[in-house]
Length: 160
Image (cartoon, rainbow, N blue to C red; front, top):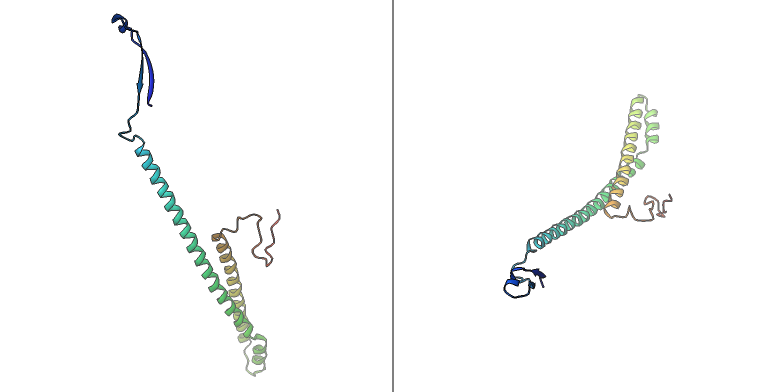
């Protein structure tokens, strides 16, 4: 039903009829007046779904890239540690000092190179930690309650 309406029509009294009348109307759905709104809402819904799928794909790609980056950094870190451990500066320094014409600068350069190697190892370790935090962010576990210390082996909760 579209509407019900009452009317007072004074000219009907001149015709010896009652001046009151009731009108009744129905809506015929030949045309859909909400079609534009519905199409707009469907388009907005499709856009939101597309954005959601894009964000989900970006998250998955970021997660995989972070995982591979961590693996690569750990491999490089272990190689650097092995190089540092295999480099026995003390034994080489005593050998160089036992040579008659030994140059003390050679020992200093060797120790300087060892310090550079340790610095690079420390930077790699820092990069591993940062990549791990990035990985946890993509995995969406950083904001889960209770907040946990992911750098400890026991994953202890962080108390406020």
